[in-house]
Each structure stands twice: as structure tokens, then as C-alpha cells.
Length: 66
Length: 271
Image 1: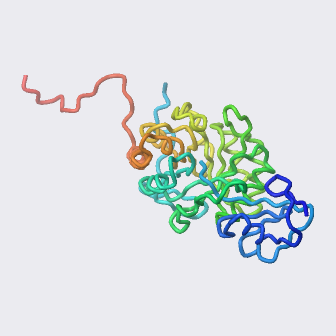
Image 2: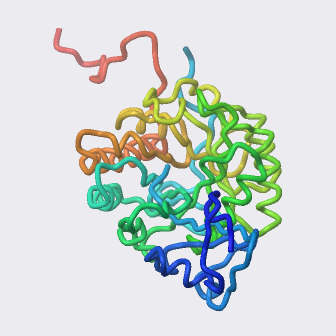
């Protein structure tokens, strides 16, 4: 399936869920926030979220800034 | 120039009191940014040395092509510091609102530093967009701290829109030029009843003291500390300067006089 992840088109295995995608990038849900098709998900809400063709996923974190 | 801060710009409501924002009181009047330090270790030590209780952070996409980086949150204890996510990078009200919501989800508080840049070269804010975004975020339960220019009219509009304070620039972000137009900050202090926090422009400790002597409620800075040769020492200097400037304002400076005034009695001189 094809998705847009952080603004770039990605080809991912069918059946991969959101937690699986994070795990594939060795990201702890604790330190990131996800926006899935415009809906903001905190760590507890990321469990059991399925991904499908055409989804838009933003994975963001807090970084140093002024 | 008669921008001397004597009379006319108010007296402290509660000398020795702290900075009040949305019902919370902070002892420190210094807010520190977390960008551009040589390392996370130095940043953590600088935060400690500054005595700050509020730190700004930015919201950014995770770089998925790189291996996992050292997360900022490993270095900042959210129990100790209020995390203030900013909306840096936004150039429209809608972008700022979206970034603010992501920041709230990550930072676990309703406080947000609202930034909408209207001009890339000067990093001046788009004040019309700030007012629009403030209204929407306040409706959504945020405590909004907007970075604005040193315009008293814009400051009043932001207060009317529900901002918990206004944060005018002293000079352009990262420029280290100090407060270029102190008169405008005095106008802002007269125009709004919410706290006034100078955000951007401070270059060194004397700038911070002079800024606080105007009677503003606090200062937000980043580059002046992070890019100093010794950020930890500069953080301590800024802590002392902000406290000194505040104390001097609360104490009330003497008026400037054109002529000398002897410190010893004129009477009883032995000649």
C-alpha cells in the first residue's frame, strides 16, 4: 500500500499498523506525536490504529527551539 | 531622548512577586529557548544555571531516514520545567493552529508560544494572522503567548483576542541588538493589562537588565545564551541581570538630572 509519511510517498507492506510503522523506525511512542489523516494521536491512542492505502501520516517530536 | 523609565510607566503591583500566567505563578522571569546549544548536555546545564521554570521547544517532523536521535525530552524534566511548544515555521494562522495542537499533544500542557512569521528576512510576525490564530486557540482551550512586534495596537488586539500575555520583540530574532525602541515597549505597557514579556533581541546581560528596568514582566531569550562562548556562564549572567533589572525597577530609579547634585551636605562645610 502507498501512504504519505511525513510528506513523502512510501510503499509499505499491507497490514502494517501504526505501531508497526513506528517500531520499524525504532521510535518509542512516548517521544513522538502522530497525526493520522488529520487526527492527532497521543501514545495511548496509537495502539490498534490500522493503516490503509492513501493515508497521510505525520510523525513529529519536540526538538530544541526558541 | 526621554525614554528614561521614571514615573508614567507604572509601579509594581506586588514588589517581589512572580510572573503570573494563566493563574500560575513563576518565580523566575526568564524564559529560555532550547535551540542552538552546542550539545544537549550544555543545554541542560544552562537551563539549570538560568533558574528558568519555562522552556520553549519546537515541533518538527521526525527524520525517518536517520537512525534514532537523542530525544530532547531525555534532557528536560517536564516535572521541573513547563514545556512551552512554539509554532515556529508557521506562516499562516491555520499552520500555527495545527502545530499548536501537535505541540499540546507532545508537551502535555495547554500553554503555547504562538509564532506566525510574516517576513522571512526580518522574521517579523504577521500580526493579523496572530490575532486570528489566538482567537481560535483560545476557543480550543489554549493559553496563548504570542510573539509579536513592538506595536501597541497589535498588543491590544492580542489581549482582546484572549492572549495570556503579549511578547513583543526587542529587536529581530537572533540579532542580539537589545531593545531598539524602548519607547514602544513603554507604550505597550500602558496599553495592555496582561503581562508583557520581551521575546527576542537580547544580546548580553546589560540588555536584559535595561529591558527589565523598563518595567516589563519577563524576557524570553535563546540565541544570546545558546551561542555565547560559554552558554552556562551566560545563563547565570542572564539570571542575575533579569533579577537585577527587575529589582531596580521595583526600587524606582532616581530621575536623570542635567546637573550635578552633591551627595554630602552643603551645610557645615569647614571653610
